[in-house]
Amino acid sequence: MLLTVDNMDVYYGAIHAIKGISFEVAEGEIVTLIGANGAGKSTTLKTVSGLLRSKTGSIVFEDKDISNVPPHKLVAQGLAHVPEGRRVFLQMTVEENLEMGAYTQKNANVDGHLDKVYELFPRMKERRRQIAGTLSGGEQQMLAMGRALMSDPKLMMLDEPSMGLAPILVDQIFDIIKDLHKAGTTILLVEQNAQMALSVADRGYVLETGKIVKSAPAKELLNDASVKAAYLGG
Image (tube, rainbow, N blue to C red; front, side):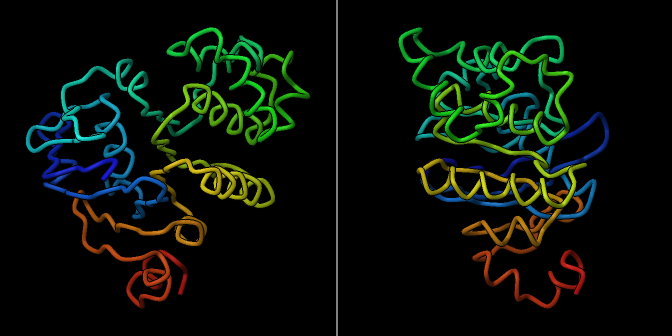
C-alpha cells in the first residue's frame, strides 16, 4: 500500500474529531472520503499531511511511519496536499505560484514540471504572468492543483476541489482529476459532491461524525440505498 492509516484519533482541544479510523490507498488509485460537513474529512487530510497530529495509531507512507514528520519534509517525500479554499499566493503571478510548488525539486527539473502543468492546464499558461488574486475561483483551483503537481507527488490529496465553483467548472476540474489518474497519479479525494467523487474514484469511505461507517468500491457506494439517501439526493 502507498498509504496506510491505522487507528487515527484527532482532537481539537476537548472535541474528539476523528475516532479511531483506518483506511488505505494503493498506488494508482483514486480513493474518496465522503460525508456531511463536520464529518472529519478535511481533518483527516490535515493529519495525513502533518498539519495536525493523531493521538494514537500510525500513518505509513511508502512503508515509512510519517506520523511525526513535519509537513515540509512530507512534500519532499512525495505527498502533496491541495487544501480546501485553494490558498494560492494572491500577490504573486501564476508562474511564481507554480515555481513555489517546486521548492523541493532540483532546478533542472522545474522547467520540465512547468511544461507538464501547462499541458494539463492550458489556461494557466495563458495566464502565467497574471497576478493570482485576479483569477476566477476555478482558475485558482487549477493553479492550486498545478502548484501541487510541481512537487512531483506520489500521492496528491485534494480537499473539496469543486467548492464554490459553477457546474461547468466542476466538470472541468473532475475531467482534470481523471486525466491525472490516467497519467498514473494516486489521489486521495475529499469532496462534498459525493456523486462526482464516486463517479471518478476506485473506492470510497463514508465518514460520519469522525468514524468510517462504510467502505466499498465506488460503484457499489453509488448504488447503495443508504448512501443514495444521505449523500446522492436519492
